[in-house]
Image (tube, rainbow, N blue to C red; front, side):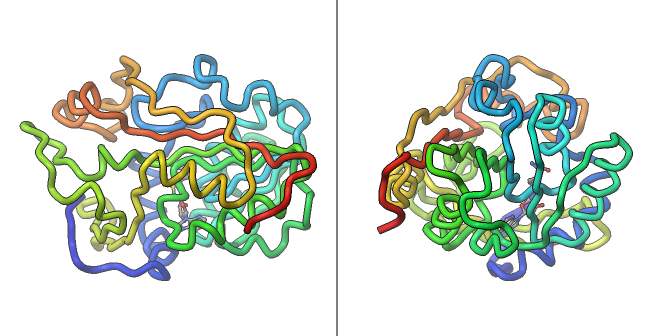
Length: 267
Ligand SMILES: C[S@@+](CC[C@H](N)C(=O)[O-])C[C@H]1O[C@@H](n2cnc3c(N)ncnc32)[C@H](O)[C@@H]1O
């Protein structure tokens, strides 16, 4: 991956359409267990959703190729809805779920406009490594709040800005300012053409504040230390330098927030 001045928010879904086939074939996200981030400790240790998932009507925002839906189904989730703006990613999700015999409704939509999901329909909204693509974070939070029932939970993970702003090779210097939240970058060398993206790498305090602004109670906010798991190298996600970097900086922010039973919505 390389930095670039190319990219625009509305180009992200098209970018994922271009990338999807190669991404799912060459790297893909683990589907054997719910996986929150690179070198992230397993859900059985973090326990962000384990006590919430049984029978829960669950919406996965930015469901990509369906790995997270499949993992949640295996954990005992109830009705599943996957939302993603990339038609090609959703096609991979459909194939993966059909092969596994897992039922899920798939909806092509942005996190900021979950049109087809009714108010209060969900017990649980999950998002794994997708909310970095949101410019309008308040819009995304407001939609999660809307589709959750009172007392329901939003649980999500994003890439940590400490990983995003630093080089992937020693001496792991800063390549841009910590405070530069928006980042244009190119995923090169994976698909037949290079793909430009724009991402927003917000800090843990930014995510906490965004959740609070939307009316959520933040129950847990994690910046986990890395697990020793060399499958990230074997799968091609990290080289040795990138793996060693994550001994120094967190790769992931994970948040568990609850829509209060009586709370007001976004302000
Ligand atoms: C890194 S994947 C996450 C899926 C899966 N956890 C994985 O890692 O493969 C990012 C996904 O976010 C989706 N995405 C991009 N912009 C989005 C938006 N505004 N709302 C919801 N999802 C979005 C992309 O289409 C892509 O499928």
